[in-house]
Length: 327
Ligand code: COA
Image: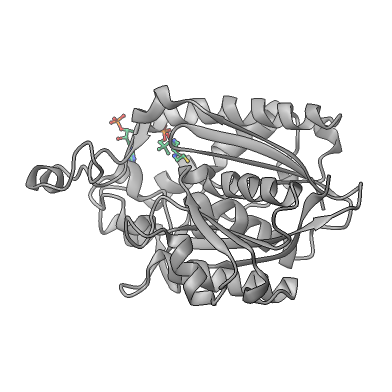
Protein backbone atom coordinates (compact mmCIF):
# COMPACT_ATOMS: atom_id res chain seq x y z
CA UNK A 1 0.00 0.00 0.00
CA UNK A 2 1.32 3.45 -0.90
CA UNK A 3 2.31 5.83 1.83
CA UNK A 4 1.70 9.58 1.94
CA UNK A 5 4.61 11.86 1.37
CA UNK A 6 4.58 15.59 2.08
CA UNK A 7 5.71 17.20 -1.18
CA UNK A 8 5.09 20.83 -0.24
CA UNK A 9 4.59 22.93 2.87
CA UNK A 10 3.47 26.50 3.44
CA UNK A 11 2.47 28.80 6.23
CA UNK A 12 1.02 32.20 6.85
CA UNK A 13 0.94 34.49 9.87
CA UNK A 14 -0.93 37.81 9.91
CA UNK A 15 1.16 40.98 9.86
CA UNK A 16 0.09 42.46 13.16
CA UNK A 17 2.38 41.53 16.05
CA UNK A 18 1.05 41.63 19.62
CA UNK A 19 3.91 41.57 22.11
CA UNK A 20 3.86 40.67 25.78
CA UNK A 21 4.44 44.39 26.46
CA UNK A 22 1.23 45.15 24.52
CA UNK A 23 -0.62 42.62 26.70
CA UNK A 24 0.63 44.34 29.86
CA UNK A 25 -1.63 47.21 28.81
CA UNK A 26 -4.66 44.94 28.40
CA UNK A 27 -4.56 42.62 31.44
CA UNK A 28 -2.76 42.31 34.77
CA UNK A 29 0.32 40.49 33.51
CA UNK A 30 4.01 41.02 32.80
CA UNK A 31 6.38 40.11 30.02
CA UNK A 32 8.48 38.24 32.60
CA UNK A 33 5.52 36.10 33.80
CA UNK A 34 4.47 35.13 30.28
CA UNK A 35 8.02 34.41 29.12
CA UNK A 36 8.94 32.35 32.17
CA UNK A 37 5.72 30.32 32.29
CA UNK A 38 5.21 29.78 28.58
CA UNK A 39 8.23 30.82 26.48
CA UNK A 40 5.94 33.06 24.41
CA UNK A 41 7.09 36.62 23.63
CA UNK A 42 4.72 37.68 20.92
CA UNK A 43 1.89 36.40 18.74
CA UNK A 44 0.16 37.46 15.50
CA UNK A 45 -3.33 38.86 15.30
CA UNK A 46 -5.46 38.77 12.15
CA UNK A 47 -6.64 42.02 10.56
CA UNK A 48 -10.33 42.89 11.12
CA UNK A 49 -11.22 41.96 7.54
CA UNK A 50 -9.24 38.71 7.67
CA UNK A 51 -10.99 35.39 8.39
CA UNK A 52 -9.68 31.86 8.86
CA UNK A 53 -10.13 30.80 5.24
CA UNK A 54 -8.09 33.82 4.07
CA UNK A 55 -5.14 32.71 6.16
CA UNK A 56 -5.64 29.09 5.09
CA UNK A 57 -5.56 30.04 1.41
CA UNK A 58 -2.31 31.99 1.82
CA UNK A 59 -0.62 29.01 3.47
CA UNK A 60 -2.11 26.64 0.88
CA UNK A 61 -0.82 28.66 -2.09
CA UNK A 62 2.69 28.53 -0.67
CA UNK A 63 2.50 24.78 -0.13
CA UNK A 64 1.07 24.19 -3.63
CA UNK A 65 3.81 26.31 -5.15
CA UNK A 66 6.51 24.31 -3.40
CA UNK A 67 4.86 21.06 -4.45
CA UNK A 68 4.42 22.19 -8.03
CA UNK A 69 0.77 21.18 -7.83
CA UNK A 70 -2.05 23.20 -9.42
CA UNK A 71 -5.27 23.66 -7.39
CA UNK A 72 -7.22 21.82 -10.11
CA UNK A 73 -5.10 18.73 -9.48
CA UNK A 74 -6.25 18.48 -5.87
CA UNK A 75 -8.78 15.77 -5.07
CA UNK A 76 -9.13 16.35 -1.34
CA UNK A 77 -8.88 19.30 1.04
CA UNK A 78 -9.00 18.73 4.80
CA UNK A 79 -8.86 21.71 7.12
CA UNK A 80 -8.19 21.27 10.81
CA UNK A 81 -9.95 24.14 12.55
CA UNK A 82 -12.31 24.97 15.39
CA UNK A 83 -12.49 28.64 14.37
CA UNK A 84 -14.06 28.50 10.89
CA UNK A 85 -15.29 31.65 9.14
CA UNK A 86 -18.88 30.62 9.98
CA UNK A 87 -20.65 27.54 11.43
CA UNK A 88 -21.52 26.38 7.94
CA UNK A 89 -20.39 25.70 5.33
CA UNK A 90 -17.00 24.38 6.35
CA UNK A 91 -13.83 26.43 6.14
CA UNK A 92 -12.55 23.79 3.72
CA UNK A 93 -15.40 24.51 1.28
CA UNK A 94 -14.50 28.21 1.31
CA UNK A 95 -10.84 27.38 0.76
CA UNK A 96 -11.75 25.07 -2.13
CA UNK A 97 -13.67 27.90 -3.82
CA UNK A 98 -10.95 30.51 -3.30
CA UNK A 99 -8.25 28.20 -4.65
CA UNK A 100 -10.43 27.09 -7.58
CA UNK A 101 -9.78 23.47 -6.60
CA UNK A 102 -12.90 22.32 -8.44
CA UNK A 103 -12.18 18.58 -8.36
CA UNK A 104 -11.49 18.39 -4.62
CA UNK A 105 -14.03 17.33 -2.03
CA UNK A 106 -13.44 19.33 1.12
CA UNK A 107 -14.32 19.16 4.79
CA UNK A 108 -13.17 20.34 8.22
CA UNK A 109 -11.83 18.27 11.07
CA UNK A 110 -12.51 19.61 14.58
CA UNK A 111 -9.80 18.46 16.97
CA UNK A 112 -8.77 21.86 18.37
CA UNK A 113 -4.99 22.13 18.76
CA UNK A 114 -4.54 18.55 17.54
CA UNK A 115 -6.42 19.50 14.35
CA UNK A 116 -3.34 19.66 12.12
CA UNK A 117 -2.30 16.14 13.06
CA UNK A 118 -5.85 14.79 12.89
CA UNK A 119 -6.34 16.37 9.42
CA UNK A 120 -3.05 14.90 8.22
CA UNK A 121 -4.06 11.45 9.47
CA UNK A 122 -7.50 11.63 7.83
CA UNK A 123 -6.04 12.70 4.47
CA UNK A 124 -3.40 9.97 4.75
CA UNK A 125 -6.14 7.31 4.86
CA UNK A 126 -7.56 8.46 1.50
CA UNK A 127 -4.08 8.36 -0.02
CA UNK A 128 -3.24 4.94 1.38
CA UNK A 129 -6.37 3.41 -0.10
CA UNK A 130 -5.61 5.01 -3.44
CA UNK A 131 -8.86 6.97 -3.47
CA UNK A 132 -7.01 10.27 -3.98
CA UNK A 133 -3.59 11.10 -5.40
CA UNK A 134 -3.21 14.74 -4.36
CA UNK A 135 -4.45 16.08 -1.03
CA UNK A 136 -4.15 19.43 0.68
CA UNK A 137 -4.04 19.43 4.47
CA UNK A 138 -4.40 22.71 6.33
CA UNK A 139 -4.42 23.76 9.95
CA UNK A 140 -5.85 27.26 10.32
CA UNK A 141 -7.02 29.05 13.40
CA UNK A 142 -8.09 32.53 14.41
CA UNK A 143 -8.20 32.34 18.18
CA UNK A 144 -7.82 36.08 18.71
CA UNK A 145 -11.59 36.21 18.05
CA UNK A 146 -12.29 33.37 20.49
CA UNK A 147 -10.35 34.28 23.61
CA UNK A 148 -11.57 36.55 26.36
CA UNK A 149 -9.24 39.54 26.20
CA UNK A 150 -9.96 40.22 29.89
CA UNK A 151 -8.81 36.75 31.01
CA UNK A 152 -5.07 36.75 31.61
CA UNK A 153 -5.09 32.97 32.08
CA UNK A 154 -5.82 32.38 28.42
CA UNK A 155 -5.44 35.48 26.25
CA UNK A 156 -1.66 35.55 26.57
CA UNK A 157 -1.28 32.06 25.13
CA UNK A 158 -2.83 32.11 21.68
CA UNK A 159 -2.11 33.56 18.25
CA UNK A 160 -3.50 33.41 14.72
CA UNK A 161 -2.04 31.61 11.71
CA UNK A 162 -2.27 28.84 9.15
CA UNK A 163 -0.05 26.03 7.92
CA UNK A 164 -0.48 23.71 4.94
CA UNK A 165 0.91 20.49 3.48
CA UNK A 166 0.44 18.89 0.07
CA UNK A 167 0.38 15.09 0.13
CA UNK A 168 1.09 12.65 -2.67
CA UNK A 169 1.50 8.86 -2.60
CA UNK A 170 4.96 7.34 -2.63
CA UNK A 171 5.88 3.72 -3.30
CA UNK A 172 9.31 4.32 -1.73
CA UNK A 173 9.48 1.84 1.16
CA UNK A 174 11.86 4.10 3.02
CA UNK A 175 9.90 7.33 2.97
CA UNK A 176 6.59 8.92 3.88
CA UNK A 177 4.20 8.92 6.83
CA UNK A 178 4.91 5.62 8.59
CA UNK A 179 1.99 5.71 11.02
CA UNK A 180 -0.05 7.99 13.21
CA UNK A 181 -1.68 7.25 16.54
CA UNK A 182 -4.62 9.38 17.59
CA UNK A 183 -6.42 9.45 20.93
CA UNK A 184 -9.37 11.17 22.54
CA UNK A 185 -10.62 11.44 26.11
CA UNK A 186 -13.95 13.20 26.04
CA UNK A 187 -14.35 12.92 29.81
CA UNK A 188 -11.89 15.82 29.97
CA UNK A 189 -13.97 18.08 27.73
CA UNK A 190 -14.44 20.69 30.42
CA UNK A 191 -10.76 21.44 31.14
CA UNK A 192 -10.43 23.21 27.78
CA UNK A 193 -13.56 24.35 26.02
CA UNK A 194 -15.76 27.08 24.64
CA UNK A 195 -18.95 26.38 26.58
CA UNK A 196 -21.36 28.71 24.78
CA UNK A 197 -22.37 29.59 21.26
CA UNK A 198 -23.14 26.00 20.23
CA UNK A 199 -26.39 24.06 20.64
CA UNK A 200 -26.00 23.43 24.40
CA UNK A 201 -25.98 27.14 25.23
CA UNK A 202 -26.87 28.96 22.08
CA UNK A 203 -26.19 32.66 21.75
CA UNK A 204 -28.10 34.67 24.33
CA UNK A 205 -27.55 37.73 26.47
CA UNK A 206 -26.36 35.43 29.25
CA UNK A 207 -23.79 33.76 27.01
CA UNK A 208 -22.45 37.12 25.90
CA UNK A 209 -22.49 38.63 29.39
CA UNK A 210 -20.63 35.69 30.94
CA UNK A 211 -18.38 35.41 27.90
CA UNK A 212 -19.28 31.74 27.51
CA UNK A 213 -18.54 32.05 23.79
CA UNK A 214 -14.84 32.45 24.66
CA UNK A 215 -12.19 29.91 25.58
CA UNK A 216 -12.23 28.51 29.14
CA UNK A 217 -9.31 26.53 30.49
CA UNK A 218 -7.95 24.85 33.57
CA UNK A 219 -4.32 25.48 32.69
CA UNK A 220 -2.78 23.29 35.37
CA UNK A 221 -4.87 20.25 34.44
CA UNK A 222 -4.18 20.72 30.74
CA UNK A 223 -0.47 21.06 31.44
CA UNK A 224 -0.24 17.86 33.50
CA UNK A 225 -2.29 15.84 31.05
CA UNK A 226 -0.40 17.14 28.01
CA UNK A 227 3.00 16.07 29.28
CA UNK A 228 1.94 12.51 30.00
CA UNK A 229 -0.22 12.09 26.89
CA UNK A 230 2.34 13.42 24.41
CA UNK A 231 5.19 11.39 25.84
CA UNK A 232 3.07 8.20 25.87
CA UNK A 233 1.74 8.61 22.32
CA UNK A 234 5.21 9.36 20.96
CA UNK A 235 6.57 6.23 22.62
CA UNK A 236 3.64 4.34 21.08
CA UNK A 237 4.28 5.75 17.59
CA UNK A 238 8.00 5.02 17.71
CA UNK A 239 7.49 1.49 19.04
CA UNK A 240 4.95 0.75 16.29
CA UNK A 241 7.74 1.36 13.78
CA UNK A 242 10.47 -0.44 15.66
CA UNK A 243 12.16 2.86 16.52
CA UNK A 244 13.64 4.27 19.72
CA UNK A 245 13.63 7.92 20.78
CA UNK A 246 17.34 8.07 19.88
CA UNK A 247 16.41 7.32 16.23
CA UNK A 248 14.43 10.58 15.99
CA UNK A 249 16.14 13.28 13.90
CA UNK A 250 13.55 16.03 14.41
CA UNK A 251 10.56 16.68 16.61
CA UNK A 252 7.76 18.71 15.06
CA UNK A 253 5.39 19.49 17.90
CA UNK A 254 2.32 21.53 18.61
CA UNK A 255 3.65 24.68 20.24
CA UNK A 256 1.53 25.23 23.35
CA UNK A 257 4.07 25.95 26.04
CA UNK A 258 7.86 25.65 26.14
CA UNK A 259 7.70 24.02 29.57
CA UNK A 260 5.32 21.34 28.27
CA UNK A 261 7.71 20.55 25.42
CA UNK A 262 10.73 20.50 27.74
CA UNK A 263 8.97 18.06 30.06
CA UNK A 264 7.82 15.81 27.18
CA UNK A 265 11.28 15.69 25.61
CA UNK A 266 12.83 15.00 28.98
CA UNK A 267 10.52 11.99 29.39
CA UNK A 268 11.51 10.82 25.91
CA UNK A 269 15.17 11.50 26.71
CA UNK A 270 15.42 13.68 23.63
CA UNK A 271 17.39 16.93 23.58
CA UNK A 272 15.36 20.12 23.08
CA UNK A 273 17.62 21.00 20.12
CA UNK A 274 15.82 18.34 18.08
CA UNK A 275 12.55 20.23 18.44
CA UNK A 276 11.84 23.14 16.09
CA UNK A 277 10.50 25.98 18.24
CA UNK A 278 8.50 28.99 17.13
CA UNK A 279 6.14 29.59 20.03
CA UNK A 280 8.29 32.54 21.05
CA UNK A 281 7.12 34.36 17.89
CA UNK A 282 3.64 32.92 17.33
CA UNK A 283 2.33 31.57 20.64
CA UNK A 284 -0.13 28.71 20.44
CA UNK A 285 -1.78 28.82 17.00
CA UNK A 286 -3.86 25.70 17.74
CA UNK A 287 -4.40 23.48 14.67
CA UNK A 288 -2.08 25.71 12.63
CA UNK A 289 0.83 25.15 14.94
CA UNK A 290 2.12 21.78 13.74
CA UNK A 291 1.94 22.52 9.98
CA UNK A 292 3.41 26.01 10.51
CA UNK A 293 6.29 24.51 12.48
CA UNK A 294 6.88 21.84 9.85
CA UNK A 295 6.96 24.48 7.13
CA UNK A 296 9.49 26.61 9.00
CA UNK A 297 11.79 23.67 9.61
CA UNK A 298 11.38 22.57 5.98
CA UNK A 299 12.10 26.01 4.51
CA UNK A 300 15.09 26.38 6.81
CA UNK A 301 16.52 23.29 5.06
CA UNK A 302 16.52 21.27 8.28
CA UNK A 303 14.71 18.22 6.96
CA UNK A 304 16.86 15.87 4.90
CA UNK A 305 15.75 12.83 2.95
CA UNK A 306 15.44 9.84 5.26
CA UNK A 307 15.30 11.86 8.48
CA UNK A 308 12.96 10.46 11.12
CA UNK A 309 10.43 13.14 12.04
CA UNK A 310 8.34 12.61 15.17
CA UNK A 311 5.19 14.72 15.24
CA UNK A 312 3.00 15.33 18.27
CA UNK A 313 -0.02 17.46 19.09
CA UNK A 314 -2.66 17.88 21.78
CA UNK A 315 -5.81 19.92 22.11
CA UNK A 316 -9.27 20.31 23.57
CA UNK A 317 -11.34 17.17 23.75
CA UNK A 318 -8.90 16.17 24.98
CA UNK A 319 -7.52 15.05 21.63
CA UNK A 320 -3.91 14.10 21.05
CA UNK A 321 -1.59 11.92 19.09
CA UNK A 322 1.78 11.32 17.52
CA UNK A 323 3.00 10.35 14.09
CA UNK A 324 6.30 9.21 12.64
CA UNK A 325 7.47 10.16 9.18
CA UNK A 326 10.56 9.41 7.17
CA UNK A 327 11.22 12.63 5.26
N1 COA B 1 0.00 36.91 34.11
C1 COA B 1 0.21 36.91 35.43
N2 COA B 1 -0.30 36.00 36.26
C2 COA B 1 -1.06 35.03 35.74
C3 COA B 1 -1.32 34.98 34.38
C4 COA B 1 -0.75 35.95 33.55
N3 COA B 1 -0.95 35.96 32.23
N4 COA B 1 -2.10 33.91 34.15
C5 COA B 1 -2.33 33.31 35.31
N5 COA B 1 -1.70 33.99 36.29
C6 COA B 1 -1.68 33.71 37.70
C7 COA B 1 -2.80 32.82 38.14
O1 COA B 1 -3.97 33.61 38.34
C8 COA B 1 -2.27 32.25 39.44
O2 COA B 1 -2.48 33.19 40.44
P1 COA B 1 -3.02 32.73 41.90
O3 COA B 1 -1.99 31.77 42.38
O4 COA B 1 -3.06 34.02 42.63
O5 COA B 1 -4.35 32.12 41.60
C9 COA B 1 -0.75 32.18 39.19
O6 COA B 1 -0.50 32.98 38.03
C10 COA B 1 -0.22 30.78 38.95
O7 COA B 1 -1.14 30.10 38.15
P2 COA B 1 -0.85 28.65 37.67
O8 COA B 1 -2.04 28.14 36.93
O9 COA B 1 -0.28 27.80 38.78
O10 COA B 1 0.36 28.90 36.67
P3 COA B 1 1.10 27.84 35.83
O11 COA B 1 2.51 27.78 36.21
O12 COA B 1 0.33 26.55 35.74
O13 COA B 1 1.04 28.50 34.37
C11 COA B 1 -0.23 28.32 32.39
C12 COA B 1 -0.22 28.79 33.83
C13 COA B 1 -1.60 28.62 31.78
C14 COA B 1 0.85 29.05 31.62
C15 COA B 1 0.06 26.79 32.36
O14 COA B 1 -0.76 26.14 33.28
C16 COA B 1 -0.14 26.19 31.02
O15 COA B 1 0.54 26.53 30.07
N6 COA B 1 -1.05 25.23 30.89
C17 COA B 1 -1.32 24.61 29.62
C18 COA B 1 -2.17 25.53 28.77
C19 COA B 1 -2.18 25.15 27.35
O16 COA B 1 -1.15 24.89 26.78
N7 COA B 1 -3.37 25.12 26.75
C20 COA B 1 -3.53 24.80 25.39
C21 COA B 1 -3.29 23.36 25.19
S1 COA B 1 -3.48 22.96 23.51
